[in-house]
Length: 164
Image (cartoon, rainbow, N blue to C red; front, side):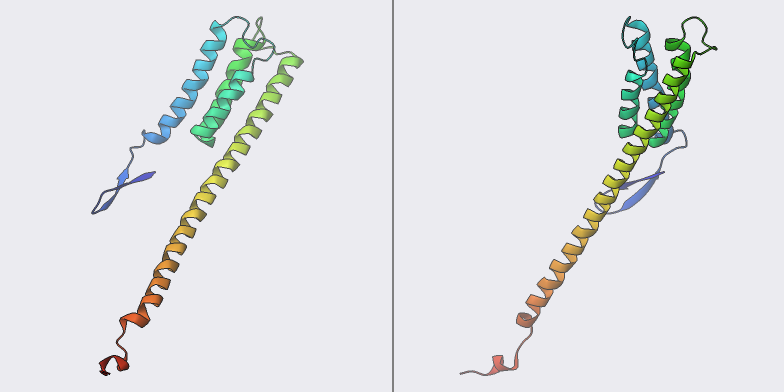
């Protein structure tokens, strides 16, 4: 991914390193899921009846600020963590039907939230691009109209040489 750095005289393309900005977003997403897990595990009674609620909120925040792919990674990581840490306290490998249904609902909810936020972000980006195009078109039209209005007055008419 390239970021353009602008100065007054020149425009340069700055190449981000491979482990730069792109992978930082994934790390932050996993870090947010880790913080939610720590908060849930060290706060007794927080979300016992709804163990996925804080994770859903974290997914929304990740999808809005970090993007679709980091949100999908966070969904995958949290889907693995939830059964082991918060659903079946006796045996994490044997999930009951209630726990399985809760995980499936969480997955569907997470995918839908990420999809909707992704669509909103794309619509916002398209709207911003269209707005820039409209501003450019408006500026071109103003320039052309200004030239058209100035043109008759800037030319010397043949009658101007005659003294009355």
